Length: 234
Image 1 (cartoon, helix red, strand yellow):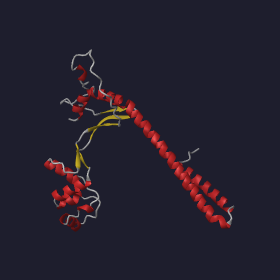
Image 2: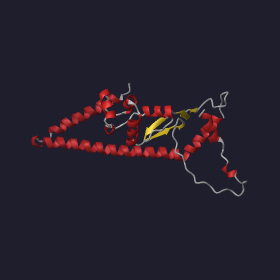
Image 3: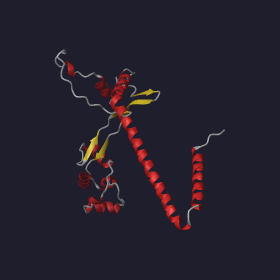
Image 4: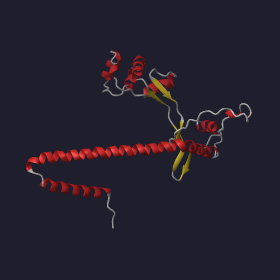
């Protein structure tokens, strides 16, 4: 026997509901039909709101469980992956040959991200773009606007940059790369290797130095973090 598809099941349910509504409508008095119709719509809206509320609560619970797992066991998980990577094969220059570890249930490791820039204060960034970029770059930086050539010239020549609602980040990043200057209103995010899947870092208060250890011994790093950071960034 063939399995019933989700679409077929949905069509079956809709057919049953349609038939039920038709039969129910036959029992409604003529002068109460409009009230009945609006009442059924109100019932549907109320049920939809109830389902959405339950869905949001369920999603919040799922997110809380995920965050708890990342917070409690994430650091240990990352440390284990780091140890596997540092014990793995290396290239001739000493850098790690692999930046990830494959498990039966998924993959973990490091991904290289591109250098990017973020618009933190729109007004400052718009003012800088207006005062420092040429017409072509200024036009490229403008986001939500109908950018005809004449309109871009008018914005630039008549100080109309207040009409700009968003900015494209590429011209800003190109300026940083070319000139080494970070425009006002922006913040640079340097390329980095980001660990995945995401974990919640646990902040632990620093412990008082142990009197049983030689002076300065407590502050020595384990070596894993520094080795991973230097190895994967090459």
